[in-house]
Length: 635
Image: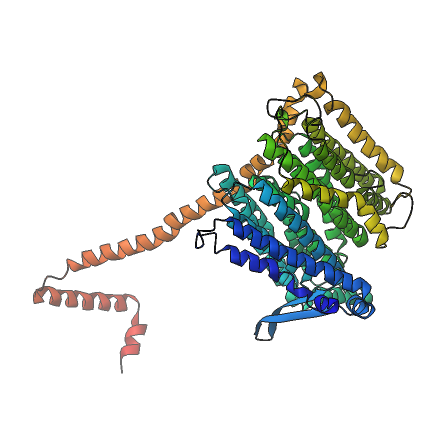
């Protein structure tokens, strides 16, 4: 039975997709007597089925010798042809691998907990069908993304996830800021998607395949035979990394994640924990191609390093707690881009593995505060440690799992990254970037903790009520997973069994950077004193950082201004040149015809006189031109 579930693991994306389709019956009110709640329960049931199938398939992979060996060394493949014409075949080719099963178990399991969490968070909301259906649509897309072996269908699925982002961010569509956030998030991600599409289209004639394993073999053939890269191949690679940059909110395509915070918080948990890493998954699958171009790898390092530092600085100045955590998402994923750019696929895999659970736990803990205190403004919160200690512990557990603090999982992954950058061409520079980023992330998370749970109660937190058990239970479950994540990684052979998993020679500077950032931030924000506010001289700096270093204004003055100028020039040329030329020639023809019409008098004497004058003029022209033309007319 378990082997059969392993061989049919490709069915997992269909369960949430079916739930999303069934939600349509409640969304426009076709089923109204029951109210909207059954749609949420149907989605919860189908997500539970998808999680159960994923877990049983993963267990079968590790416990059944025959099935395990077959899946590890000869993965189960499946596919269907979408287009086959003129020698071109485009199909959805998929592989059921160990990495795909782990990813699907994580996606569906976290999604199941978030669905339960959302039932409590949106208890009085009437938009259940649209919201829960969109969440299931997200899950179906992510599971299909980890299964597909085609870069073309990876692009298609990323496009569907962009559509899902638009739908979920616009859940509360009667609010103007929500509409603006959904539109801006959609358009910003579309920039990276369009560039990615150009790269995907250009890749097929060069490599001859869209399958990741085929591309890996093609890249290995180039390396082994010493053949030069095809012309323009680096431009293709730059286009291919544009899509993951947009999905992972990397500079300069990072503004959409900030705008997407207008959506309900349960969707923020999924988006910041698993949806954003969909782009990183595609980037890791493209690693064999990226290794062919040191220039493109350098671009990844520059983009990732600059995003890691800049986004963590911006997070320190945010007042909205959801936006503060969203910029920390961009910062952490920037470190992953650095690992990919340095060729550390294993390190990037570990960063990707330890990231989702701590980030989900942070947002779950924050959600219990936002829903019961009716604000997400950090300046209006405080003093909740005596009232909400369990959620405070959950936030601290998520913080510990995301920064370089032993023995938690984040420390092991960041220590591996430090070892990787130490062996690079610029160890001091890149090592400083990693340590500085870890310091700023630690400071940013402790700042959020201090402003919510530290200090004295405010009018918003004076009577902070406990939330429903539907929100508390999933949060505590995720907290337990985060605390036990190092043991799970050791048990599965990812890290060696040592007193401190992942400890290495660079563990001391990493720990020092964590203690520096967290300690300074704790001393600054945990106690209510005069230094809890920035001095007036630094107010402008905080405002500059809080507004994303005026990036949006910069885009309006450069990119948007250029597009508007080109549009105005196009409109002027259309009206003045194209329409003016056609309209002018038409008017001249009409005017000439009108004047010629005056010569039509109907008098035969005028017509005869015109013919005589024409003959005389022709004869004069022939005589003036010499005897040559006349002689040619003589017999």
